[in-house]
Image (cartoon, rainbow, N blue to C red; front, side, top):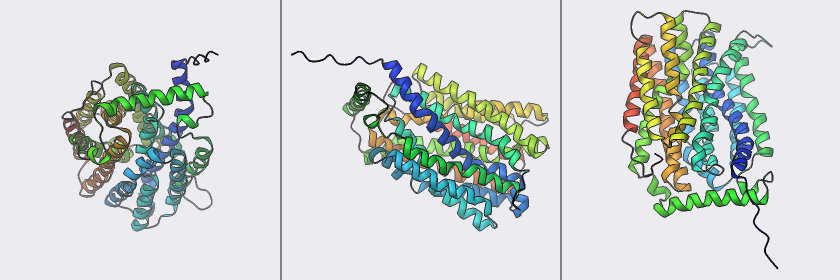
Length: 430
């Protein structure tokens, strides 16, 4: 009796099938995630005056989110690797949705600080967990492109959030101000999505009922072979990974570079309003243009990194170019239109480096080691969120103008890019 021939697999069709099943929901989750952490930048245009919050108060309150985020950074990534992405992400979404909506009811700086801190704790582990989750579904050659689709959610959420927030700022329902409705309307969808994740998410290919058995076997074998080849070169434990110079250089580079990136995100509406002297609605329209440029940049970056096989120099070049363009926006005597052009070029650089950068940990490390390293590196990225926003708020509180603040952010980007240039990776894909 002859054995049945193995079922032939159309590999390109299988990869498209996985991408269409995994990416749309993940992108929606990250759109909501980033909008809920960053919508305070839009609310600030009215919230500060209503509550009497100073620039220093906003700087610390925006930044303290990232201190809360640090608490579950490495454990969150490891839980996705060793437990369940579906259950972990559902917990994250439901808790952060309620906390984000509750931001509408803060009254004092202390309330503001605590709610931002708790929002960070609730959302902790989501981004590094997604990066680990992608390693369960996408081979290395496809991972940068998949990550670029995830990261396009960042500028898309803010490009979409700007006009939506502009409309909500003028709403006055049930004795609540527009900025309060902004938090409520933009926060509660995360709760609904948490329930959807529990029903629709699939942890790994082996439990995917929407794949055939042959497709499940092929995908699991392909990913296992890639992991085995990586371990054959160098088996690195979690604790060994956390002692590697490359991991710490990545953490330091992203911490310094992202000090400019996060501050740019949270203070952009304030910067545009001060430069243009326009209305809140026009300010958010210009902010939306900035983030629309970012959407194109993320997609271009992922395509280019996968086509060339280069990740490191895409990250380095994008970060340094961001700093240069941002510094050019501070040249004295420019009209606002010229400054806005420089800011749009800044957006092209600011969103170009991100996707290639976050594929770097998984290029040379084993699964658990890469998960821990990703968590550590993202801790650096989120310390940047605290430091960059706190320093920016302090500078503004001390009376420094837009040019001085933007030059500080430009210096962060350039310094971060220089540090990343010293990272030595062990594969040609670096």
